[in-house]
Every structure is written in C-alpha cells, then in structure tokens.
Image (tube, rainbow, N blue to C red; front, side):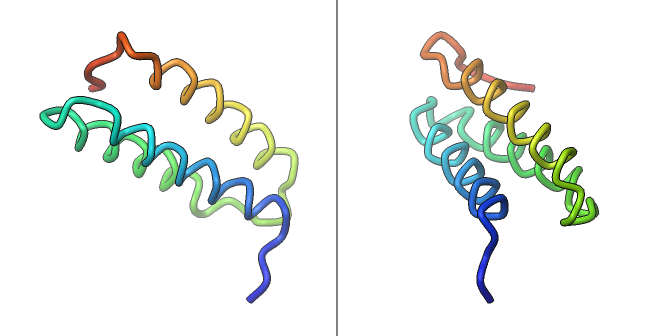
Length: 77
C-alpha cells in the first residue's frame, strides 16, 4: 500500500515523538511514549480525506513536540 504525503507526515511525526522520548530520563520515558500513543489514538477514527483536520493536528502535534522535547521537561502526566 502506498502512503500519501500527509500519511507520511503523520508517521514521521509519530516516529519523531518516540525518538524524542528516548532522550528523556529512563524513569519517565514510558510516560512520554504513552502520551504520544494516546494523542495519536484520539484521532485514529478521523476520516483520512479530512485534510484540514489532519493538517491542523499535525501542526498542533509539532508545537507540542517542540515544547515537550525541551531539555528542562523531565516528566509528563
């Protein structure tokens, strides 16, 4: 199955989130991974043709990643 450009963007964002979680302390790494999984699963039922909503969520996810990947952030609840 070939993925669209938008699908590739979403997968790349998810992989980046998981990569960034590896930079966090081992004790809290699972919290970051669970948070990323939960946030992506919230939108799993979204129609794949709803480009506006998907693009909005990708932008929102990038902003959240930027905040949570800061070195000062040690844990997420």
